[in-house]
Structure formats: C-alpha cells, structure tokens
Image (tube, rainbow, N blue to C red; front, side, top):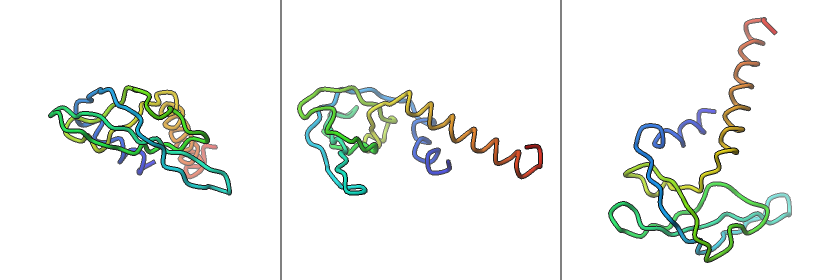
Length: 112
C-alpha cells in the first residue's frame, strides 16, 4: 500500500493536468511465458516540450493501438509521471488495500 500511495503522492499534492497523447509503441515482455504489453505515449507538457512516457500498467494485448490519441493525466511539474487514467482500476485497488488493512487491524486487535 505504501508503494501505491508513494506513486500517487504527486497527484495528491499538485494540480493535475490533462493532455492528449499519441501511442508511439508498446514495450513487450514475457510473464509466465505469455507476452504482456506496456503502452508508450508521447505528449507536450505545460511548457510545450515533448515527453515520452511508458505507462505503468501491463496489458495482455497491445492496446491502445499505435497511433491512437488518448487522454493522459500528470501532476503539474512532473510530466514524467504521466499515466493513462484507469479510475475503476484505482478504485478497486484502493478498496482492496483498504479492506486488507482493516482485516489485518482487526486480526491484530482480536476483533475478528
């Protein structure tokens, strides 16, 4: 949970910017013998400089497709931390982590 919060901290402490980005390629690697893909996108930050960023989420297929224009978010002043917003994924992630934290707390205190 600490690593998740740490990666989201710039988004919580700074205004969030939105920008249009173009998918330029997919980095591929293998996990358990199956290929997984990580989209790489390019966009212009608030100063007009072009930045290329690899999204932190791996997909089982190369999506979005190369050349597609998508909307990304990044904390102001940190364009290298840009990401494709996955609001449902983030809500489920924090919900699961919060649930695990509560259950662990209840186990430790003997309330469970």
